[in-house]
Image (cartoon, rainbow, N blue to C red; front, top):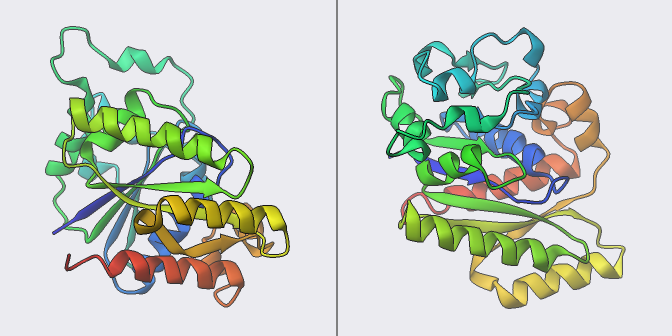
Length: 256
């Protein structure tokens, strides 16, 4: 059975795209068939996997507006078992997608997934840093949501905001949406703040917080610049090892 995980946080710069790319790559490393979906108009996941968004003619947006079949848009990546549904730089107002006469505009992505010809073990969705048409489509289609949380002063604000979002989606569109976990990112054990924030989150949300913490590691931004997951660019770096550990935690839930 395919597990669909949306990676989302209203706040930008928390490692959302980096996590989408590297969790997907790590899962593929463990022989899981993975589809990564870039639903962010900034197209950073697409770029981070070595594709030029400016050269992308068919993308997630053509899938959502119904002009192309999802199977015709998929791209093989350089990583075995990892397929990309790309995005492109999108500057038109997103509300152009919403037809007021359409009963369920927030179910378009879910309907597109139902027509996939290939079966995947995981579909990982990289969401924009906002709650709008695109993110709602992702959360309606997902089984669970993974929330990257930067180890900073406003971490709890971000978590509380996402909990409110999850509650609204559950009540209005997807009652079965669960929490995959809160993931501490940009963690620096040498700072008291990082340790303090991590401990605070764990004390409040122990069952929903990953044991894995993603460290600050120079290999991660370097890999982004090269259009490669850090698990490919520097497979033995601390960043890579952390994402392998995260993938194992995610896979531990496969039989639950």
